[in-house]
Amino acid sequence: MSIDRQIALESKAWPFEEARKLLARREKAPGKDHVLFETGYGPSGLPHMGTFGEVARTTMVRHALSLISDVPTRLVAFSDDMDGFRKVPTNLPNQEMLAQHLDLPLTKVPDPFGTHESFAHHNNARLRAFLDQFGFDYEFMSSTECYTSGMFDETLLKMLAHYDEVINVVLPTLGPERRATYSPFLPVCEETGKVLQVPVVETNAEAGTIVYQREDGKKVETPVTGGRCKMQWKADWAMRWVALDVDYEMAGKDLIDSVKLSSQITRVLGANPPEGFNYELFLDDKGQKISKSKGNGLTMEEWLRYASPESLSLYMFQSPRKAKRLYFDVIPKAVDEYITFLDKFPEQEETQQLGNPVWHIHDGNPPKENVPVSFNLLLNLVSASNSEDREVLWGFIRNYEEGASPENHPILDKLVDYAINYFHDFVKPAKKFRAPTDTERAAMEALMTRFEGVREDRPNDLAEALQTEVYAVGKEFEFEPLRDWFKALYEVLLGQSQGPRFGSFVALYGIDQTLGLMKRALDGELTS
Image (tube, rainbow, N blue to C red; front, side, top):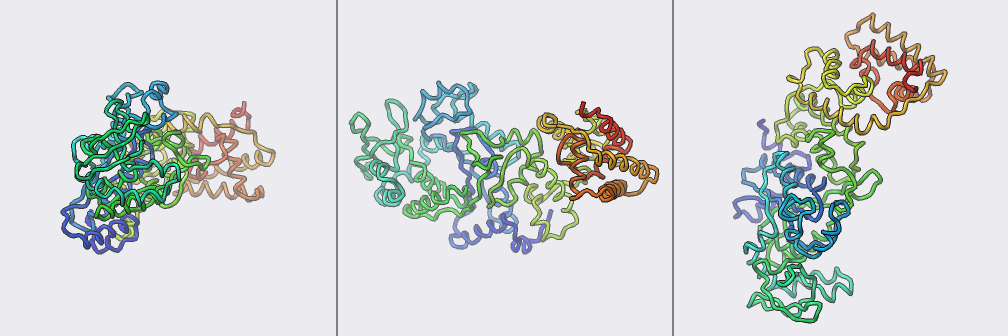
């Protein structure tokens, strides 16, 4: 859709704020013919949510820039796959085999899954397949290929020429023991192929070589070019920024100090560090940082079993500087928030549209579909109907929304499948019905009578009429607080402590079906 550039220039949405930083950067150095975005990836573990989040958020900034500037852009997804394999992640198969290949470049470690040339190739393929699934426009770069092809050689020689200055930037950040042996260059042993962490005893900038001392005391001279050396990661980050002329790269809040150090090294090499954005980390259900080596938290594949890609993108867009828990319980909320934002979009002014997450999720062209049923309602429909048959569920939906079909409601059709999966894996195993108390029983019997009256009256807004009756019964029987009445309905009828807006649920499920459900609950059939 066409958006007024001036409105975009003034938008307060965070991707536009980041894009404006890049405009200011270009004003200081206007000679470059494009803006280069980079996202980094360490393939020592399987691809995880943080990886996707960084690419998704960077893409949102890239698209925002395209609205306020005509400058061409590129996005590089860079894999640090020449890094030494220092630790075996606990969530991988063939642990003993992997332990035999420690310190080799990740592209030389055998694939524990047995499907690719190396462990790095396996993880790189998974990353690319996932990014491709989302339609990201990016160029993939391999650290191994960049080093061995000579792409980095010029910058590596520059790093060697400024060796002492680089050392002086890094050493104050290290402890005494590490400081004694640190070198930004990690030689690759010609005999073992391992990426060595050994002292460098001599540098020769004119020859482009270093001399390092092996553990056995032997001194070896090696070029720093052609893949014979790998940079320590903080120096490597700076080297990459300079070699590729990176303009923008995000990083997690835990890397703030590393960004500062790499930026200092970049300036030592005579270049300007990229613009950046520090996002908060994801937490698991216990409030612990999600770790790719531990495998805690949600995987990308798990999210996509239970919810749409768009809901995941929404989760990444919202409050990027706020630490958020990332586990299964957040999925239904994210799905319903996406539906809400999508529903609001067509009626909003341009200024509001640019702040609406769906504009950023869909590159300015969100789909036009009214989704009449929330994800939470679908989950409870599956639960109450005791059916995981999508045709049965669509029968309820058609009764609720006249003319609705999978063909004219493709988003809702996908939600039906997601709801079935989520219910089967999470809701169904945790369902626990209880018998009503005497007061709750009397209240439910009164509610059944009122529902029968609503059925006879056939009001235009059925859901609202039903909700009014639920409130009336709760007040009549003096539930205090009133939410205890709704909790009782959920626990007795649905076997769970939380649920949807009850009037909307009854309208979707059907009054007759709800009355039958309530009768079975009062007769003890659900708890037996």
